[in-house]
Image (cartoon, rainbow, N blue to C red):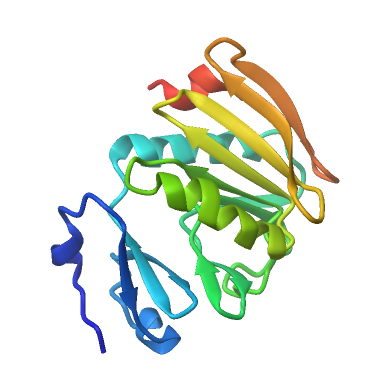
Length: 189
């Protein structure tokens, strides 16, 4: 079994790709931030405090106005038989069994880090689309932007783009309500 410890990735500054079986991936130390895609563990550096704070701001943004939902950070999402992703935050129906990774998320979101920019922007989007997830939110602290993508079946449609020049807007999470988003509130401590 390929071995990697939390200590070995403590100072990691880039994403590592380590071939391993799904069983080996399940046995990784829970302190290791890793997704599993097509026989490869994608190990990410630990999230910074700012990264975690932004994910929490997104959870708070949806908890108040949306009805009958659960919003969580850092949960594995089964996007196909060969792929488990771990978005920075996810929104599920209130009745979803979060211990069952088969539950389909309504919304997933990624806080883009320098080490995961390509993974978050280009590799995860098709996986989330194929899994039937309704919305994909991308928050980029460097570009100071929030982009909300809506699943249009064969592709993602842009529902909302916010930045410092256009800092506020709203997005409808079908069947659950409308969320008001504010770039400044999400990104600034």
